[in-house]
Length: 272
Image (cartoon, rainbow, N blue to C red; front, top):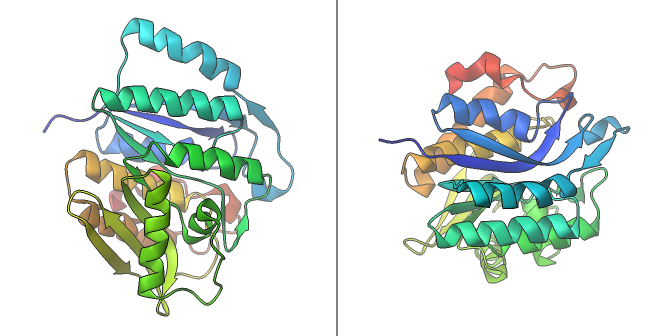
């Protein structure tokens, strides 16, 4: 099976193994040629409280026409955090143009968790993420991000299966074809719920949660998921594999003193 070329459009974090820095080793390990277009250079994980961010909108504005002139194309694009209106428009338009040539567009709407937006993330970026989700073949917000994207209330006690399906439909109404919602408490059980537009199936996959907040695990989930999807494995099966890999990675790193630093995934590639 020939490997697929993928472009990651996300922030590059200097100190912490999150964002693009967490995804690149995984996708490279799976053998997919992986390229990058940074949306910002970030000093460290935002939860340290102090950080520096360099917005790279100017770089993106100048880079995409060069790539077009050179005839560069990708089998898949995965987008993450956006930092300006122009950046979101440029990337969304590029994703749309590439999709017309058969490129698969994955959107990870990185914004928050636990009912709140991440430190440094604003409602403006929620609007930018809606624009990105509108061009997605597959988007995979966590439950917090799904609530912000759709304007639905965040239910601390979780949701029913019917409510989860309606939330999936609200995200589909934004424009995404297939949808996953991670970290979702459904009928009292932590789950990933999904809708696959290829067969019209709604599905739910349960898992046991390891206590604690581990930064970068959402990026690892995305990378494992995409790696298996690009090998033409079904969405539900790929989701289960990604869930299990992330669980094992968290378990092996559950005693890390500094969880803001992320999991040094290169040391645990045997789990993939």
